[in-house]
Image (cartoon, rainbow, N blue to C red):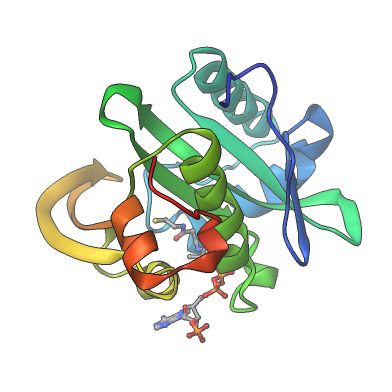
Length: 197
Ligand SMILES: CC(C)(COP(=O)(O)OP(=O)(O)OC[C@H]1O[C@@H](n2cnc3c(N)ncnc32)[C@H](O)[C@@H]1OP(=O)(O)O)[C@@H](O)C(=O)NCCC(=O)NCCS
C-alpha cells in the first residue's frame, strides 16, 4: 500500500512519471505561464520566475500532509524534461475516493499523452491506494479534458452549477467518476485489476 514515503515511479509505454524537483522549475514556468493551460482551473497564470518554486512547495506540502500526490510527466526517451503534471489533488481515505488533476505543456497536446499518463496514475490508485472511486471536476467548456475522461471510460454524473469560483466568476463543473466496479464490468485491462478486494 502506498505510504507517502516517496513519490513512486510509474512507467507507461512512452512515459516516465516521477517526483517533481527544483530542476523542473523552468519547465513548470513554461507550462503555467500559458493562459491556454490555466484557462480552465484555479491556477493563476504565472508571470514571474519565482512562482514555480512556490507552486512546487505547495505540491510538496500536500504530499507531506498525505492528502495529495502529483507526478511529473516525462517522455521516457527524454526524462530530463518535465512536460506535464498528473496526480491526485484530494484523497479521502475513509471513502476510498480521490480526485485527479492534470496539466500538459501545450506543445504536446492531442498526442494521447495525458490519456496515457492518467491510465498509469489511475491504475496506481486502484492497485496501490485501494481506491474505489476516482473523480474529476472539469469546466463544461474544457472539451479536451472532457474527451480525455471519456476515453478513460469515466461517467459524466452531472453538471454541478457554479461549483467553482476563480478568476472573478463562478464556473459550472462536470463531475466525472470511474468506479472500481466500472473497471471490472467494462474489462478495462489498463487499470490492472484482476479481482475486487
Ligand atoms: C486537457 C489536457 C490535459 C489534454 O491532454 P492531451 O495529452 O492533449 O490529451 P489526449 O491527447 O490524451 O486527448 C485529447 C482529446 O481531446 C480532443 N480535443 C482536444 N481539444 C478539443 C476540443 N476543443 N473539442 C473537442 N475535442 C478536443 C482531442 O482530439 C483528443 O481526442 P481524440 O484522441 O479522440 O482525438 C491538455 O489539453 C491540457 O493540459 N489542457 C490545459 C489544462 C487542463 O485543462 N487541465 C485539465 C483540467 S480539468
